Amino acid sequence: MGVRSQGTSPAPATAKPAGRLLYVDNIRIFLTILVILHHLMVIYAGSGGWIYLEGREDRFTRLIGSWFCGSNQAYFMGLFLLVSAYFVPGSYDRKGPGKFLVDRLVRLGIPLAFYSWVLRPLLIYLGLRDELGVSFWAWYTHGYFRDYGLIGGGPLWFIETLLIFSALYVVWRLVVRPAAPAPAAESRFPRSRTIALFALLLGLASFLVRLQFPVNSRFAPLNLQLANLPQYIALFILGLLAYRRRWLSTLSDATGKLWLGIGLLLIALNGPVQLLMGAAAPTAPAPAGEVLMSLVAAEWEAFVCVGMCIGLVYFFRRHLDRQGPLARELSRTAYTAYLIHEPVVTFAALFAAGVMIYPLLKFLLAGLVLVPVCFALSSLIRRIPYADRVL
Image (cartoon, rainbow, N blue to C red):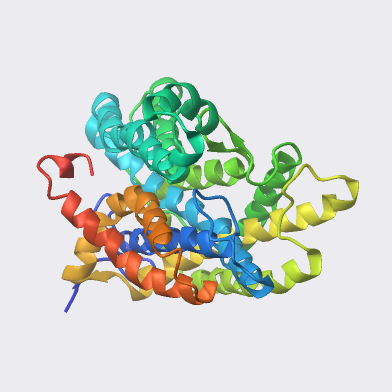
C-alpha cells in the first residue's frame, strides 16, 4: 500500500500549499521520464537537436517523432516551471532572501556550473575527438565556449532558466514588494472562459516573438530558448500565483476533465495537422505566406500547454496522490536523473549504433532500459557523501 497525501478532494478547504504534495512529486517523476523519452526520440527520429542523431528514420518514423516531440514540447517544460514556481514563494517566506538565494545557488547553480564547464565539454570532446584533432585543453579554451555557449547547454538550459527566474523573484520581493505578503488565502480557480482568453493571448505572444526568433533559435551565450520564453515566463508567474491563491486545491474535477480533454484532443490532431500544413511551427522567420500557419501553430501549442497543465494537475491529484517505496525513491532521484540523462542516453545510443533494427522499435527498447538506468544511477550518485545536499 502506498501513502496517500492529505487534501485530494476537488477543493479541500484545509489544503496547505507548503506541505508535501505527493501528486506534484509524481508529476515531476512523470515529466522527468518524458524528458528522457523525448530526447531518445530525437536520437532515433531526428525530430530535434541532440549531440548524436541516428539518422536512419523513414517518413513514418519522422512523422511519429515529430508528433511525439512536438506534443511534448508544447507543454512539458512549461509544466515543469509551473510546479517548480509553486514552491518558490513559500520557500522564500520561510528562509528570507539571503538563505533562499544561497539555497538556489547550491541546488541549481552548482550542478549547472559543473555540468556546463566540466561534464558536458568532456562528453562532447569524446564524441568529436577524432574530428577535432587537437587536445582537450586546446579545444576547451578556444572552441568550446565559442561553439556551445558560456553556460546552460543541452538540457541544463532549464536549470539555468529556473535559476534566473528565481533570482528575479528575489529582486521583485526586495524592490517591488518588500512588505511580507498576507498568508495564502484560498480563491476560486479561474473560469474556463478566462483560461481560454489566457491561452489565446499566450499563443499570440508566442507568435509575435517567433516572427523575430524562430522555433529552435536560442540566445547562444546562455543557451536560452527565445521562441518559448513567453510560455516559460507566463507559466512561472502562474505557479507563483497558484501558491498564493491555492489554485491547485480549488481546481474542480469538471474543469480539470474539460481541459485535459482539450489538451489530449489537440495532441491527437497534431499528426494530421502536420500532414496538412507541412509542419507544426516554422523553423525560419515566416514570410508573408506562412504567417497564418505560424499563428495557428502558436495557438495550438498554447491551448495544448494550458490544457495539459490543468488536466495533468487534476489527473494526478485525483488518481495519483499516493506514493509507495518505489515512487518515493523515484521522487528523490528525479532531479539527478534529469541532470545526468544527456550523457547516459547519448553513450548508450552510441554503444547500440551498430544494432540495426527499426528506429521506433529501437526507441521503445532503449526507453525500457535507459529510463530505469538513469534513475538507478541517480540513486547511486546521491549516496556519495554530501551529494544529497546539492542533488
